[in-house]
Image 1 (spheres, rainbow, N blue to C red):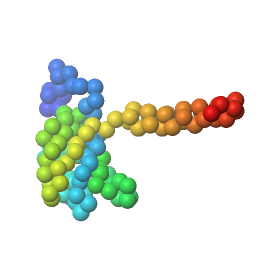
Image 2: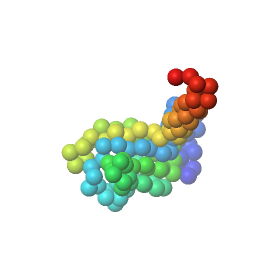
Image 3: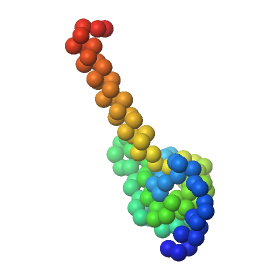
Image 4: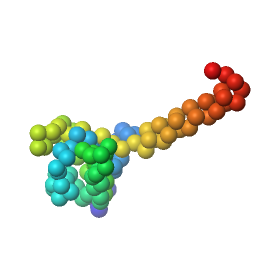
Length: 120
C-alpha cells in the first residue's frame, strides 16, 4: 500500500481515469481465469464481470484495487490482440450512463407535454 501512495504522491491524472475499466471486443470463449491472468499482470484486480447475456457478450468490467494499476492496464491493453481480437479498453464513466437515461426521461416528458397541449 505504501508503494501505491508513493506512486501517486504528486501525479495529476486526467479526470476520466478511474479504477473501473470497460472492455469491449473480447472473444466470446475467453474465461474468467484468462481475464484475471491478463489483467492481473498490471496489479491486484478486485473484480471482473464478464457479459453473459446476448447483448453484453464480448464485454467486461474490470475493477482494480488501485487507480494507477487501472491506468497501466488501460494504456498497455488497448489494442492488445487476444485470440484474434483487438481489445478496446476504456475507463468506465457512470455519468455517460445516467445521461442516456436522463435523455430518455426528458424525451418522454416532452412528448407528454406535447400530447397534453395538442402540439405535434
